[in-house]
Structures are given as structure tokens and as C-alpha cells.
Image (cartoon, rainbow, N blue to C red):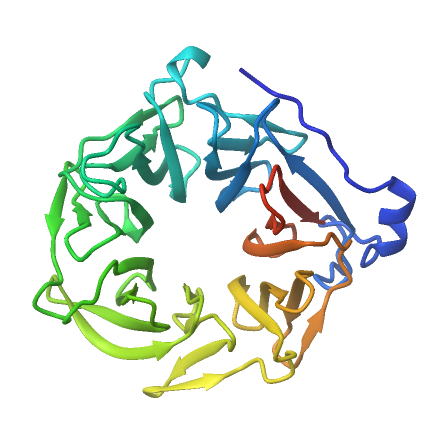
Length: 360
């Protein structure tokens, strides 16, 4: 089932006034600070809530987002360069993923090798809440999405790895940690690494192709995050951070970043705040780019729930004048360096739609 979605939330004339410029990705003097921005909305028909959480693409003509919809549909959308459509995972739509489900993260290696993780939703969990035996991993082989067998575990919220035969997925609890060797998913554990509080969760898995890192939230009402490093096949504690809403990103050059009230970069064993010019009211949730001198950071103002997009060119940070939607939490991003897709969730309940800012 393909669903044509409303293309714009704002009139075209207003978007032109708010845009960053008129340059397109085919210009020789392309400047990532001079993007023209448009807005797409994702909301499954008659749904009460559509909250997309994660985005990944193999190209600007092949972008996926995944998340939550209270109906049995609208869990994953795909952009083909022209429009967004519901992927149609449910068997009623011709798919192969039996519901109800939710998806939390998506990660791929090519247009023909993409993974997404989340949870099976049990209508009457025992004991509540829905913690036990809910892990969900699905895979796209270029033709169709299918569920892949995993050990029993709780909700999965993060996925990443070196390659198609070396992939990690983690979620709620120290025991919800799985590794894929190209053939099967196996359970791993960090029980001997950390003394845990209640409801810990994996947030990120990143790699530079050699070193691998994970960000782990301790839970229990704290703002403590642990940076783990994979050493000889075991996750070991490397550092602890207080990031409030932390995620990791690894640049192509192998520089490790962490987000939150600060944007931290690890160098020579020390963390440095590389975003001092940002107002204190802004929370940065994700960063992504094609180099350390060409990257985007996205977040929102805690004071008025206005989404923010910043660009770094190696010298300074520039706040891009994107079309403003309020209230919205801008929380994820994908870019190939020329086109940018920024994922935002309406901050007012019930979050009936997700917005995607597209800069090109």
C-alpha cells in the first residue's frame, strides 16, 4: 500500500522567503549553508499518533524513517526522491511483519542490506509493562522486509556495526544485547562491566571500521551515560558522561562525538565541547556529516520547543534559517553532504504527525 502524503505544511511563497538560498546539489559551488528547505508531513490516515524516531538512507532517492503509530500500519516510510510512502510491513498490506510492532532504529550498509529494530507489542503483557520477549529485528534484502530470529529479549532501541557480518543491536536492560555474525543473532552481556540501576538501555553503536563504541544509559532517573568500547569481543567501560539526552556519532575520519546539552568530541583521551556558541537552552540530539569540517547538528530549544539546525564548516557553527514549526523536537538527521533530511516530532500531545525538513 503506497500512501501519497501531504507535501507541505507552509505555503510555497513562505518557504521561499524562509529558505537558506537557491543552490542545488548539482551546482559546482554548492554550499551546505545555502540550502532550500521544504517540509513533508507523515501521518497515517485516521491515526492518532505518528512519531518517527530514526532515519537512514543509501542516497537522497532512497531514505527510510521508522517509529511508532498507534494503528497496525505506518511504522516505516520510504522516500524515493519524489514522495514519501508507507512501506506496508503488515501482512494486510502485503508485507511479512506480523504486528502489532513498533520500530525504534534503522541502519544499513547499502540499498540492499538494511536493518531495523524495535519491539513486538503484547496486548496483555504479563507482567506489565511490556518488557519480556519483545525484541524485534527485521531485514531488507533489496526486495522485501522480513523478521529475523533473535534470542528472547526486551525492547531494542539501537543498532550499528562494522559490516554485514559484524552487527550489534541493544535495548532495554543489560541482557538485551545481541551480535550478528552474518549468519545468526546471538546473545551477549555486559553484566560484569557495570553495576546497573533499574531500566538501563543501549542508545548507540558506532564504529570507524576498527574501533567500536556503544553509549549505554544507566537509567533509574539519572542522567548518567557510559561509553563502552569493544575490546577482544567484550564491551568494557571507557568513560562516564552526563549528557541528558546522549547519542554517539563517528565521523568518517574516526572522530567520536557525543550529543546533549553540549556537543563533545573525544580527542587525545579528553572530551572537548566543540559547540560553545550554542545557546544554553538548546539540546542537540544528533549530528551527522561527511567530514569533521562539514557536519550538521540538530536539536531544539527547551524554552519554546523550536527546532534548530546548525552547520559546521571547520571554522564556525552557523544556524540555518529553516522554516519554523512550533512546537517541534528536531531529533534526527541523515545527509550525503549535499541533501539533508531532518526528522522532527511535534512536541504537543498526541503528536499526530512527524515532519521532515528536506534541504537541497
